[in-house]
Length: 624
Image 1 (cartoon, rainbow, N blue to C red):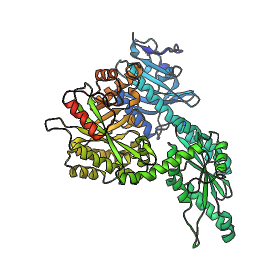
Image 2 (tube, rainbow, N blue to C red):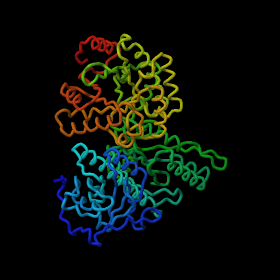
Image 3 (cartoon, rainbow, N blue to C red):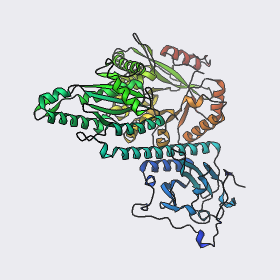
Image 4 (spheres, rainbow, N blue to C red):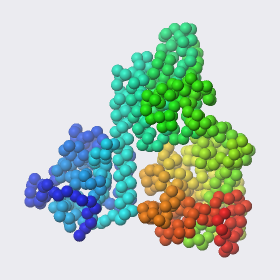
């Protein structure tokens, strides 16, 4: 008997080929692909089409779709292998999955429940079905993500876990879209807007902030609430009158909502005060995000030939550090203005936030001098073939020991550099230069196999018009073959302009340079773009390796990643390997290359060379 993964309720209606009432009606379309009564969230969207095409390719099925339900119908939001947009709930295959979270039927013709279903005995002739239920923010079932095939089949545990993961992604995107629509609806309430500026008043700003806090908690980033005070507004009124004062307020409001300033929402909270909200992923980015806003607001304003310079201070509170209640956050940003300013008219509410932001600012200020003065070092961590037969390369990792700040980890200074165009370029130039110098002297003798040297590159460099030429020029200056170099970049960092990045990556690969996708599995972008990205190597993040070999789910996930990568022709590197048992398992699973403390920590060039010499002589050195 085929496997039916879930407990399904009995049919309330028998399906019969001879009963005209049981025949599935044709899918309904209007000129827009939807009838006028379709639910708003069922409208087609390009990024859901990309998801469903990826699902179809990953599982190699001819039919896959995202569907949503209303009271009477099932709507196909996005589909592969299905025509039309609407199916009556009465004739829906997915309706039986809604109450169970997940349903899988390996062979519908051997299922008493489904063997006479219209979708089984006629188009689209479904023999296999797997569906995961999608729920709204209140956990109410609203639709399904489904796979179907015209041949019987069954998913294994790894494939089932991937389908559930895809379902979580789609569900999250639908719910975020719903929340954004609700926020836009609230923001459109014109009776809660300031007549002079058109901005929301403090009440509406607080309601919008409440929704933004909920989104920030879901997406794990910080919200920064700004209380902006115009210190010289009274002076402007005295000198130029109320007309000028209102013109200044309108100009500042327009600057706040300009697309390039990055503010999520803004509002009027008093005659001389604005509120605004921005997002950051790290507290260290606080001053780097706020300062450009202040600079833009303080820029001169020309009014009828008169140049007026606003003078603005800002009070800052941060969610969740300073609370998650909108009223608390707005009040604490206001209270911060009473404290001494910390940095260029910025007043931060908490010491913890202030210290972190100041640290980030100081690191940024000292990093340029350290790069220009060659104060950073490069350490190297070996990459070893999974069977232990040889060293296939090294990854170069930057290290920084500052005279004042002490040891500063790459996890701290690299993200800071990536957000500063000049620092990003300096760090890239320094890394490539040093890698090419060292790589030229490895391998030890001509008879040894070539070693690849990997270097991490900030993704914003892939958007620079002359980046390819810069890399090739550096290789040429050191007589290093392009085939010796691997450029590593993280999956999350590619989201800014994926098409432009791919164009640059194609040029690099055509020149012989290898590309590696680092930290695989820590974000969603890899699942969306892995098939498109012209990469050669996929590096599984350490967080997946840590639970090996004792966690069965971790084993299944890593095994699935390896199979998918090999199916795309990629070499797989496991990061963070620390134990012999992990090496044994990863070799068994088919992983190609290992990297981690089991072999060596990142060490300076001399120690890396000693490691290579010992290994080439057949003596596997103890982990350094």
